Image 1 (cartoon, rainbow, N blue to C red):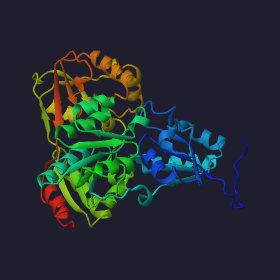
Image 2 (image 1 turned 90 degrees about the vertical axis):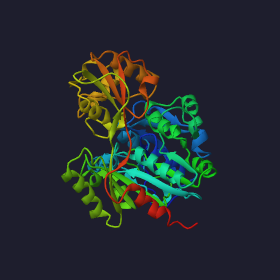
Image 3 (image 1 turned 120 degrees about the vertical axis):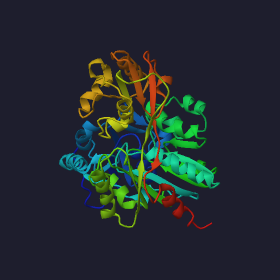
Image 4 (image 1 turned 45 degrees about the horizontal axis):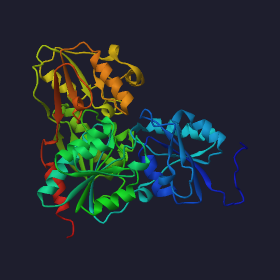
Length: 453
C-alpha cells in the first residue's frame, strides 16, 4: 500500500482508525462514536487479554451501513504492521486494567508506526438514561465490584424500586446474536452458551431474582432495560468506566492492592469520578494498607464518601479440609490480568486447615499451561479459564491430572455444573459486608433519597 496521505489540503478522506480492545469497551466506543460517522473509518480492531477473540470480524449487522463487510479483529501484536500497511491515522485505546506505563508503551508503538494515539472521553461514550443509574466500578479487576453491585441492588429493591442490572460486555462468542441479551433465569443463561467468566457474573444476579442485561449494542440494551426499571445498576467489568452516565458512582478499591488506585488505567479515573469509594477486603488486609487505600481516595477525590467493607468467605458443605492436600480453582480474571496470586478459594482452604495447596502447573494442559506461562505471578492455584468448549475441556483435564484430596472452587459460578470433577468438592463464596461507619447502605441511600421524585 502507498504511504500515508497527510491531507494538508483539508480533503474529505475519512480519518483511518484502529481501535485497540479486548472484546468490550472497544465495540462500545465504536458503536457510540464511530459507527455512523462518515468522517472516520475504522480499519480494524485489535484484541488482547482474552484468549481466542482475535481473527474474527465485527459483523456487518452490528457495524452498520458504512461497513457492509464488517470489521476485522486482529491480534494486538500486529498493531504496528496494521498501522503501516493500512496507512492508519489514529489508534484509539479502548480496554482496561493496564498500568499507566503499559498504556503509554502501546502509545509508543502507535507513534513509532506513524499514527496518533488517543483515549475517548466519558462525554461521547456514556449513554444518557431515562431511569436512575447507579454505576459500580473499580480501581482493579477483582476488587469486589459484583458483590457490591448485588448488595446495592438488594437495598434498592428493599425500598420498593424496580431494579435491573446491566453488566459490562463480555462478547466472546458469536457477536451478532449477542447484540441484546436478557437473563431472568438459569435456563436463559444456559441457552446463551456463555463462557465461565460470563456465568460468574450472570448466575448470582439471576439467583437473587434480578434481571441481568448484557451484550454488544448498549444503546439498544439500555432502551430495553429502561422499560422494566426504576433504577439500573451498572456492574462494571475489570476497572472500566461505565457505559451509562450515572446518577451515583460507586468505585470499589482493594485494600490488598493499596496504591493500585493511582497506577492503573482507567481505575484512577474511576477513583476521581466516585461519589462513594468502597475500600474492600479490610477483613484480610493490614490496617496500614487499608488506610493507604482510603488515603489515596481522599487525596484525589476529597468530595467522595469513603466506606469500608469486608469480603468474608464462606465454605459450602463438603468434606473436611483439615490436613488435606487441596486444589484451589480461582476466578480467572482476578488471577490473570487482575494480578492477584490467589483469591477467595485459597483463603477459605487455608482457613479450614488445608495442609497444602497443590500446585496445578505440572498437570496443566493446552491453553491452561499457556495461561500460567503468560502470568508467572500466579501462586499454587488454578485460574478458572473457560472461554469456549475446548478450553473448558482443558480445564477439566487439568483438574483431573492434579493429585489432591479435595477441590475448593472459589469462582462465583458452580464450576461443578460445567466440568466433571472426580474428587470431593467444596465451594467458597463471598459477599459484601459492612466493616465500619458510614455503612455502604448509609452512603448509598443518603444520595438515592435525595433524588428528585
